[in-house]
Length: 181
Image (cartoon, rainbow, N blue to C red):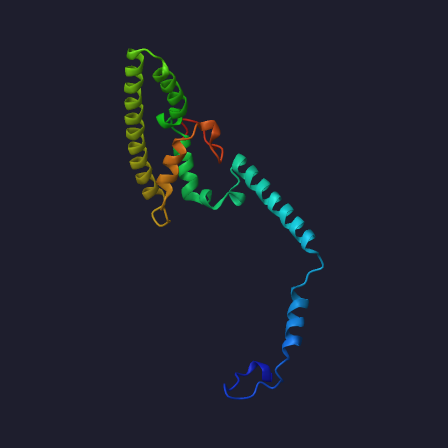
């Protein structure tokens, strides 16, 4: 065993002189300096970030688990996505229905405005009911399939996914409607 490997008594001298401040600072600077200028380092960092974002975008399109953002990673989130994507949900048609209802409410005919108001109520109630049913079913399926894993936030993640139109969802749906996840 060498002397450097043996524990040193706390009150023993360290065996070398304390370096002068100027010598210590110059040594730190020389270690920290790279061969690149600030502009070159910034350019390289931008290119690396652009490449990482491109990989992430391709992963969102293909479902490649390695490069997905942290919020989409893991088997629990994958199951939640597949669970939502394998079924039809009323909430995914909310935006087109909202446009139709808004157009109906703009028409200066009292009966059409009343119908638009009733449609708002019907759409909202149907979305809430569909979300509650989906949430309960998903929570049960997650408890059965992943009893020991962290399932926190997976139901909210899935319900937010139901609000997006299917073709606009990212990561892209990996299952067809009617398939079992």
